[in-house]
Length: 205
Length: 251
Image 1 (cartoon, one colour):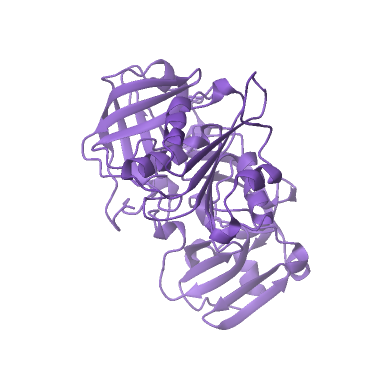
Image 2: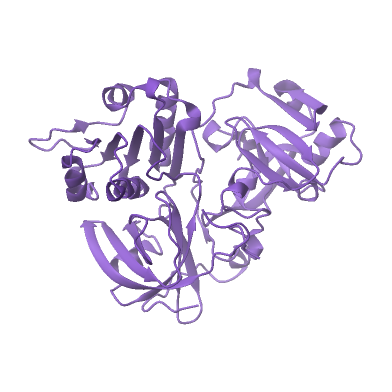
């Protein structure tokens, strides 16, 4: 650690907000968008969500069927690997637990999941980080349908990991036997991505 | 790209040059002991530490061409009320020490030999990683046809203006097109207005040649242009984007 001459920084107020910001992050009130390619424009009439294992379909929901599943609202802090954090973001959607329940799955067939999205994006997640209320497939942000640029009609929300894990435009959750890397995880980013341990890049402890 | 499993360590970097690019932009070149080379389009994390241990980190695109030893250049635009960019622009001097970690990102990259034709679309300071690609291409003597369509608010907002003119004058297959969104100076021969589909049709490469597009700028700029490109029939998997939000400082 080297001190940079003259730098004092602009601290936020001491206290609770500070405790909610992981190392190396700063709080923004904007909602920046980071995506590797064009924004897919998927009409809800063409949308479906599939849950599968290998070639086996475990469940599939149309937009209407998906929205008929139990709805959960959360208010969470989110942390992007590009350094911004946003506090108290409100989301509504269907928890992974409720999705499993709707598919009649009592025990996950494997310990890992790959999320597949419109546009070809993928990201890998341990099942343990999706279940027990930790994650949802969100359809609403701050009371309104999620705009396409922010991942609508539906995106993953896994707020305790860096936000690239909260895949936009999610369409398919596929159980996999091992923790194979997804898109950014194959391009130098961390396989797991815990912001509190600052696991930004491949090789970070 | 980084090697699998090897940690990117923070490196001490000594500032060796501070260059004024325009009224709100400077390029800061530092020498980082232990820096391994980057690919054009990658970025670097910088970390500033106060005497009491307080730290701030930001990501910046790398501006200088690969193969530049241990030198790392970033081009910084002022973000009003920002925490880091005003310090970098107003306080940082040659001889000061900052910390760097990188290079980062293996997707929004182009290297000589990757081919093209290339269509580079820049909004404001989004030109930085694209300039790195142009510098890499020129340095390698690569002749890939490339067009840069660069949108700025006014001519005084243009970054790298003289160097871009020089590169375009080389006659090696690089075409430079500026557009100004908020003014039309006298004797202006470039485009004016936002980049729209007709402008892309006027200047973009033939879609049949399977062009590779790189789009970098503020979110609304990138959203609009990526959508235009898809609508014009550019292959979606050959459109790579990098966006920064209104909070700035980021990529």
